[in-house]
Length: 193
Image (cartoon, rainbow, N blue to C red; front, side, top):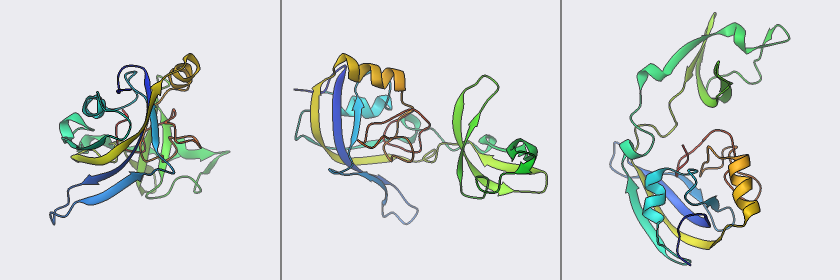
């Protein structure tokens, strides 16, 4: 069975990004034990990621690069913002357990849209957060293999549509115990948006 619309696809992969030294850096892996599983063609993954897998079948290997512009875009300095420190208070006290440099925190805008941000500084009156995707500005080089392709059941499609996916390959809070991409934010890379 070839990968096409509304097929459940399971892959293992290594994701590399270029470094200034020229040697690619391994950013994340989906393994045989903890693969990435997603429903093809319903908008869970980056369009270019799905395009590269189209037509492949069980056992096929892949090796492709998604240019930054077709991945998570260029890094945008305007997406680093200062927020009032008081919005991070719980019961009148600043939440030091969640808000510290390097932590990724869930936020919500005025319209109720959820997204993740990395805390880059905690100041006297503000908290500086980076709203760029962690892989913004990077070309994404995937090397992997197709582990499974099967027709999606109605229940599987509903679980992906209802549970949704901002999707992620690195499973930083975006995958369930079975490795299925889930709702939430996109800690990572291979193809969520």
